[in-house]
Length: 329
Image (cartoon, rainbow, N blue to C red; front, side):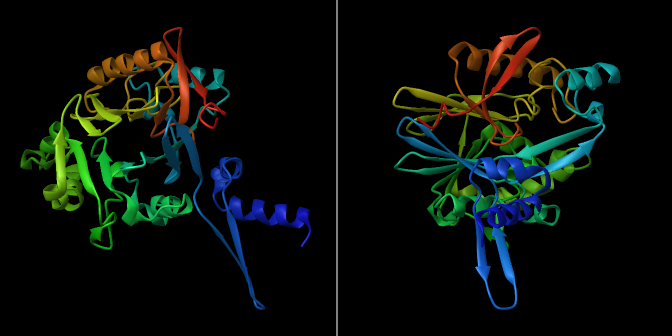
C-alpha cells in the first residue's frame, strides 16, 4: 500500500472521532490495522499526550468530547447573550455551539502511578466517551498499575470511570479525595434537592471505595511531590493539585475554569455548573493569579485537548497560551 493510501486510511479512521481527528493526529494517535482475506479492521485508541515534568512522566488522556449549543445558557449566565456571542466571535469561535473535552491525567512519579479523575466510564460509551482505560493502555500502562486514584471532585464526568462491570476499574489502587466534598455528596440531605442525582452517583461509585480512601483537606500530601489545594466553588469541596519534580511545577486545575475563553478571559462571569458562583469566581482568580505569577503550566480538565497550557494576566482576566514543546524537552 502506498504512503498516500496509508495517510488516506489514517484520516478516515481518525474521522470517526469527528472533531477529535486533528488533535488525534497531532498527538501521535496509533492506527492499528489487522488484515484478513475478507476485511480490514481499523482500531484506534483515544488521543493521548505524554509530557515530562522533572523526573515525572505525565500522560493526558482524552476520555471523550461533547458538542452543545446555546453557550450563553452555560457561560456568562449573568451577562447579556450578545456579550457572550461577541467574546466568542472575537476569539474566532462559533457563537452557537461549544465543544467540551474531558481529560483525566496520569502522573508516574517512579514510585507511584497516580490517576486524577476517571472520566465518564461505562455510562459515557454510547456517546463516544468513557475511553480512559483504552488511553491508559495506549500510554503503556495497565489499569492494575494505577496505585492511587485522586478525585478532584465528585461530579459525574469525574467519577464515572471508578467502576467497570460492577467492580473497581483500578483493582490495586487506593483513593484520595476531599473530605468536604465527600461529606456533602454522601449526605442524605441531598435527596429531594437538585444535587440528588449526584448523591446517587456517589453512593454507587464512591462510597463502596471508602475503606480504601484517604480523605484530605487543603495542603495535604498525596504522594511525595503532589499536594492538594482547596479550590471550593465549582463544587462544595473542589480541589486542585500541585505537582513538583526536580524544580519543575505544574497545577492540575480540574474544573476551576471550564472554557479557555469564557472562563479565563472573563473569570467573573457566572457558570451554570458552578454550585457557588461567587466562590467559584473568587477561586478562579486566586488559582490563575498564582499560575500566571509563577509562570506555571497547568492541565485543565475541560481545556481544549491536550488540555495543557499557560496563562498570562490580560485585561479583565487571563489569556490562555496552549503548550507546544515546553514539556517535551
